[in-house]
Image 1: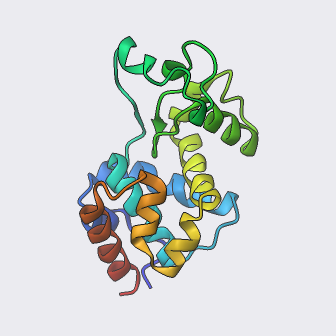
Image 2 (image 1 turned 90 degrees about the horizontal axis):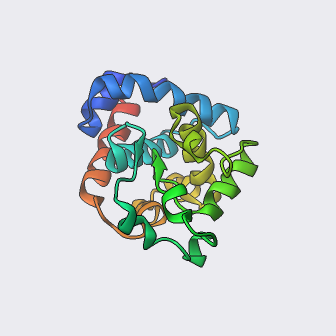
Length: 179
């Protein structure tokens, strides 16, 4: 088994920039270890394929103007209860953590002040921990271990956007890991 994963092979398997993979991969491996997650090829394939599909191994921030983010103000499903919450708790990180409720939840879970300093979710080390915690909390790790890739994609994306790239990346990664 090709573990630990070699960044060049991960980049090729996911059609990602090798320099971005070199920076991000150790962060994911550290976050998995810190949050006591098994180093299973299926779990890692689901996680890495998610990152490749969502942001190409780059920590990103949701873009938009004032009117765009106002659409998120008052969204109780996101916990946005104060004026300006839409812009303040916009999507950040490897999986676009969004909404006051999610910032509060993962701030508490990781012992960080994400409410007072939401920009911390854009720090790659913190974003990697948020990604792994999200994967565990939302059952993505369980479904990855079961090989239910549609379920993993829906839990992260809310639908199947990017599913072809995601699934191809998963299968390519598993081939690398098991060779």
